[in-house]
Image 1 (spheres, rainbow, N blue to C red):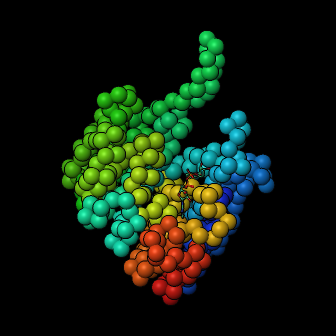
Image 2: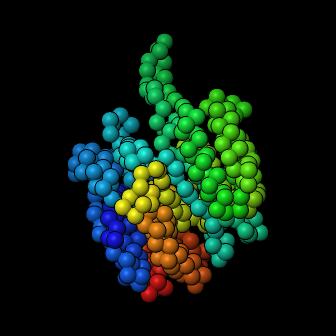
Image 3: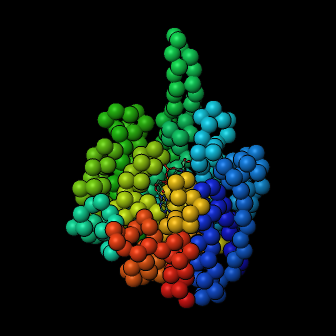
Length: 363
Ligand code: NAD
């Protein structure tokens, strides 16, 4: 079966890292004899410029008809006007919502040879291997009302953090199943000492836990979790948390790996594709990095590892997924470094050289 893959390069370094992943896809499919077709579509700021919308109808249609979607990044100073009615990030949030992608899975597994690139001591990084499941289509990023209004001569701005038990429950079930396939430990992160939505979160996760007696459940407040991620990162197996907390904690967790340019993600829902697998959206966790866009130095590893997740979760091509991950691991072990990973005095590769090293190790 031929896989239908939509690519959404987006803005800033997005096109640079997506190009890298496409080259790796070509190499690995050639090696294992898999067939695919690519359909490039617009999203974010570049879509606003060309089509007048951050999520054009054609993009949404193509994604709905695809088996999987590979995205670079969206956003940039050009589209930062706070009064604009449409913004690049709105396109991405809308896509996740429209595709029903309620779970964002982010594996964090620092490469042993990159410990110098991490601000954490090497002994703290030993054995770190966890996955964060961030709820993606609820919480404060979507809650209504969200508005500015004038009251008694003051300008007020408000957002709404809202969760239903059903939204929490489906994310929790996916997280417990992930933990069952790993070391059997789940940490649920909330702010139940202050927030009503977090009290419902904790109560619902505790109820769902009854279906998974083989998984050990731990609850942490988000402020404590932020600290424990730095003091005992190796103790985590699977972390489940809300949209806002997950957004922040995964950026923090990314520095354990040396650079946020390394971290992949998979956004999954319940819709199945022609392979009978979830139709996912795969993207690195970093943004469009306007400070380095166009220089050809972006680290493509997060996007290449996102491609590996796509091969595994949406296409079921485990041999190809493992080959990509192994090629990245070996390239890093062999000393290949982009500028964000290179220690002082170490030689760095540009984006093209870095993906060529990965392709060479696949071939
Ligand atoms: P960012 O992730 O774009 O960059 C943060 C820092 O990390 C920068 O110094 C950047 O150069 C560096 N960096 C990021 N990815 C890198 C890579 N692959 N290789 C090397 N260095 C890398 O975050 P930001 O600067 O806060 O945001 C920039 C824009 O991206 C904003 O418009 C923001 O809204 C948007 N954004 C988009 C997404 C997304 O598309 N999913 C996520 C976060 C931010």
